[in-house]
Amino acid sequence: MHAVSFRSAATPPASTSRRGALRLPALLILLAAGVLAPAGIACRDDRAPAGSAADEQVFRFRLREDPPTLDPAMTSDNLSEAITANVFRGLVQLDPETLTIVPAVAAAWEISPDHLTYTFTLRDDVIFHNGRRLTADDVVYSFTRLLDPAVNSPRRFVLEPIDGAGPFAEGTSSSVTGLTSPDPHTIRIRLARPYAPFLGLLSMVNAAILPREVYDDPQRGYQRSPVGCGPFLVSRWEQSNLIELRAFDRFYGGRPTIDRIEARIIENLVSALQEYRAGGLDSLDQPPAEDDALYEELKPEIRRYPYIATGYFGFNLAIPPFKGNPALRKAINYAVDKKYLWEILMPGGNIPAHGIIPPGIAGYDPNLPGYPVDLGRARSLLAEAGYPGGRGLAPFTLWSNTSEDNRRIALQIQSDLKRIGVQVTLREADWAAYIPAVEGTAEKPGQAQMFRFGWNLDYPDADAILRPLLYSSNIGPAGNSIRYHNPQVDRLLDEALIATDPQKRAALYREAERIAVMDDAVFLFLNYYESWTLFKPWVKGIVLTPLGEFRIPLERLRIDRSGS
Figure 1 (tube, rainbow, N blue to C red):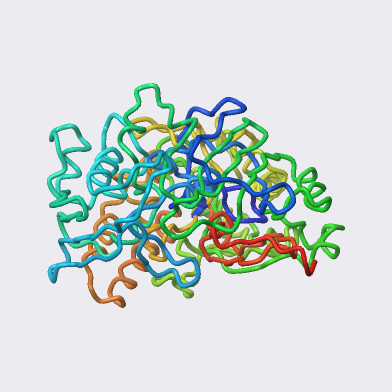
Figure 2: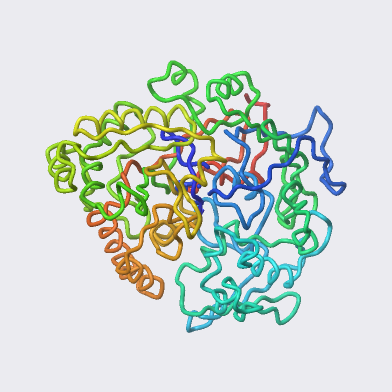
C-alpha cells in the first residue's frame, strides 16, 4: 500500500494497498487498529484561512468507515491512506499519471555506481503544519521511528533494505547504521545490498517525514491531531461522521486551490448514492453496477480507469483445514466460477484473475493457466485431499468485511462449493474486528480460516505485491496474512531484488508467482480490478491514476460550477 485492504468486490480494495488491500490489495488494501479521535477536535491555529462561504472551494467525498489510523507508520489500508496521503509527504513520491518517481521533500538525489548508497538533498522550504522547518534530523527520526520495535509498525519492511535496519528493529542495536545526516540538508542511506525498487518503497506514505516533538508525545496526541508537511492538514474528526481537512497555506508545492475537504463517513451505499445524487458529495467511490436502475442516470459521471490491484480470498495456511493441503485449495479454486462472478453476477469493473500480479506490471504472465471452473477436477482434487464428495471435511468459515457486494460474492462462493460437497458458513465483521481476525500477529495466526481481501500496489513493481503477500518474514500484519512460507519463493524474490536486467527480474517474478499459484494455490484467485469513480461535472483537475481513487491528488482539484 502498499496497501492491504479492500472495500468491496465491484470496486477496488479500499481499505488493507495497500497499500496495500487489497490492497487492496493492493489490494488489497492496510490494517492496524489505531485509536480513533473523539468528535469535534479543534483546528490548529496555523490552518490556512478559508474563503467566504460564497467563494470557498470545498470537495466532499465518501469513506465507508472511519480509518483505523492516521499515523503513517501504522497506515496499511486505503481508508487510512485516503487521508494520510494528503497530510504527509516523504522524500519522494509517485507521479500519479506516469507512476515515475519524482521529488517531494527531497529536491534531488544521487545513487552510487554499486547501487548501495543513496544521497538525498532536501528542499529548504518545507514547513510542518506546526510551523517548524523540516531538516535532515526529521528524516532520521521518522525512519528510525518506523523501524522502532516499540512502535511495532506493520510496514517497517519499507525500510528493511537499509544497512542496520534489521538489528535495530530486533532491539539488538541502538541505531540504524546505514542512516546518516552529514548536514541539515542532506540524508545518506546505505543499503545492506542492492534493492532495485528501493525508491518505490520510499514513495509509500509509511516513509513520511514527521516532526519529532509531535510524534514523541507519550500521550499520542498525534493520533487525534496528526502533523505532516503535506498540502492539507486535519482540522476536525467527528467519529463515524466526518474528517475535515483544510489547505495548508505554507505547503512547499504551493497552496491548493481547494480550501476544505470533507471526508464524510457513510457506511451504507444506498445512503451514499442518495447523498451524491442530491449534491452532498462531489465524488463517490462506488458507482451503481451496470444492472442497477441508477446506472443509466449516473453513467455520464462515471470515470473508468485502470487500477493495479488484485482481489482474492486468502487461505489461512497455519490452521485447518488448509494447512498442508494444497489439493484442497486447488479443489476450491476449480469449483468457483470466476467468469460468472464478474460477467453475470456483478458485471463491469473486474477481470477474472488467474494469478497475483495484475496486468500492466512487469512480470505479469498472460499464459499462467490459473483455475478456470472445472467441477470434475475439483471433485478429483477434493478426493485427493482426503475428502471424497466432501465427506469428513467439517464446515469452515468464509470471512468478509461488511459490504453488500462482499456478501453477494460470499453467497455465490458458498453455492459453488456446495456443488462439490463442501459446506461453508459465512461471517461478516466491521473493519476494526476484521483485520485482527485475518492478520493475527507475527507469532500467532488470526482465527479467520478463509477471508476476503485485496491488494493494491503502492508502486508499479511486482515486488510491491509478491513480497508483502508471500515473503516469509512478512507473516502477519506486514502483509502475509495467509502465513505462507516457501524457501524457493523467498529465494526467487531475493534474486529479483538485485537483478539489474528488467527482463531477468520479470522472469524471476513470473517463476515465483507460478509456484505460489499453480503448486501451492495460496489464494482463491478472484479478480483484477478496474477503478470506477463518480465525479460531479464541476470537479476539475482530476488525475485518474492507476494507484486508485484514494490516491487521486486532491491538491490538483478545483471546483468550477460555471459550466455545470
